[in-house]
Length: 436
Image 1 (cartoon, rainbow, N blue to C red):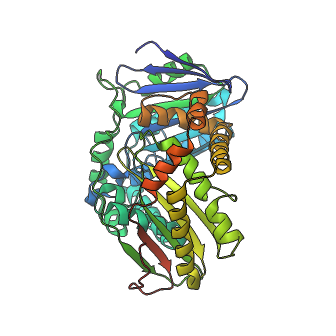
Image 2: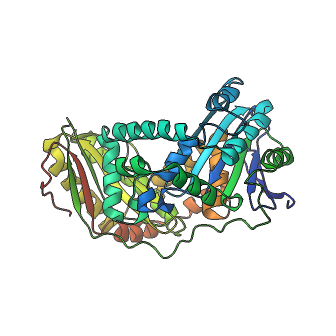
Image 3: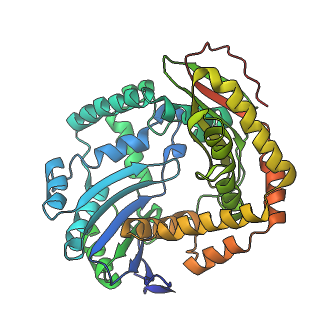
């Protein structure tokens, strides 16, 4: 293994170290001696965008199956061993990565390391478990379809990306999950979950060298104890996907409320303007003081929930506005939203709004680092997605450096891009609200 590289300390008290095992697996930790817990995660640089249309949902299917049993542990063992010491374990799948994590008392960290490494390296994917989880996932898809406030975001994403893998559902569809075989899932598992594509991140009251020793022992002789290799390169940021033409989709559903998302392609993850976008988004729709919230909810009472958001991927991104409103108010809400976006694109932000947007961005970032789980996530994403860990002070400096002119220029670009519109509610499919 390589010698640990100390990445430095930050004002919040954490010391970061990184070790690369000969197999190419990376271990990144942040030592925080003032807490008694540790959060640890195994992150794979594999997500739903890495699936073929036939295998849509394979990453999420695999996430379920890795908890169903290994050569050494049953599904009950995996959950009971962690819960017996008061810990918790779970997982999630995203479009560009998957994470398996646990949070335990510091004294139980060796157990968490062993359990997570075991399920990541030694899952048996038993036939019976595949069928059981197939049923669970189909129920999960059905439950999601019963949540129009969630469904509308997926419809919008598909509108933007069309047939590109980023437009696929993370869960897959009833058709792909129903047809997926154990052999296909196992092949996906063994081809994708290789040491160079994995990062183990941990934050809390820990010793870096001890974790390296524990991980090395837990993975010895497993498929993740591979031949010498370099860590996989970060997912390339180019070429960016070809976006679908602006479009409108209405999903008829017998709901009491209409759910609306309007937006356009946004910025990629490493775009230098991402800090500016964070400030702009907060002022537009990031809180109760935002323009959209004040105009649509506070002044006019047209919606209970209204907000804007940005999503970044390696090579592309989204900017969108969501609102949930009475079906008869959709047109008015859309008109007000478009007018607000056009106004900011034309005039930018006031000095007071710029200051507030910076404060919101910095405060959310720092407050989000006050638990070991968010610290662990920050480490892993820096390693997988950015190739570098921006210090806390560096992040705050980047936000402080955002100028009014930069926000104005970004607004003039981002907010005037051709919009797509997704609506779920009690309407006909041919409802014809304009795209803007």
